[in-house]
Length: 289
Image 1 (cartoon, helix red, strand yellow):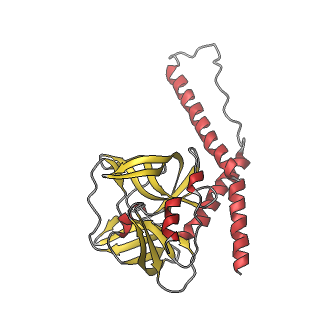
Image 2 (cartoon, rainbow, N blue to C red; image 1 turned 60 degrees about the horizontal axis):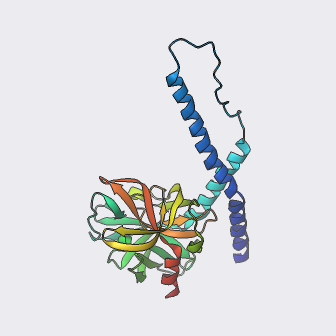
Image 3 (tube, helix red, strand yellow; image 1 turned 180 degrees about the vertical axis):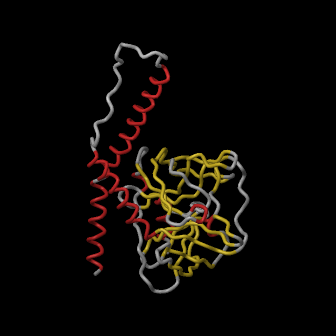
């Protein structure tokens, strides 16, 4: 049974990897089509009130259905990638006020989503024994947590803290019981390149199983998050919000390349620049067990 599961996972990864180039075609094509549309609008605004008898050499619109099969394949690849990762993404809840008051602007830690006296963040199952990686902002000083898989049906289990690494802002939790859980593997974050496509998963504002798409803007960004210096965070343009902290950043092979911890905000509004702790930092935490 285990070997059958491994073969299925390998086939899924091979399909996603084979379609990665199609994802790039999809993104580039979308940008090109957007530029073409902008040019058409500019020409329309510049057109005189009376139609000119001279035919303008306008760019031709893409032929209907051109590249549709490839775009469908790219779309299917993204859907398959999200589906393969989502079972390992959880919400992490704890009680108590805790946390901290973030300033209104600058490079900020992503706080948990506040629901009464409950704080809700995100996490990733990185070992089938129930080891869950999350952030210090999500865990706070608590020792008891509720881990939820969105389902349907929603499944919840209690968990406890087993390891901390304040220098990387990471915490490792362990689900109670002897069950086996879906998990994702850690990539070598030293191989992350600027321009890589990535997906971010989390629980923004309590909305579980949420996914956003972006690219890597920097693979070793030095950032001061509210007075704490980080030397090599991964910078992405995938949109993150309160509740996304501790969630995974994954590559197009479905491997974890980072743990989301922060974002840039202007007047309390996040602007599409986010930061994640590289997965090799998480390896050090796991190695200590």
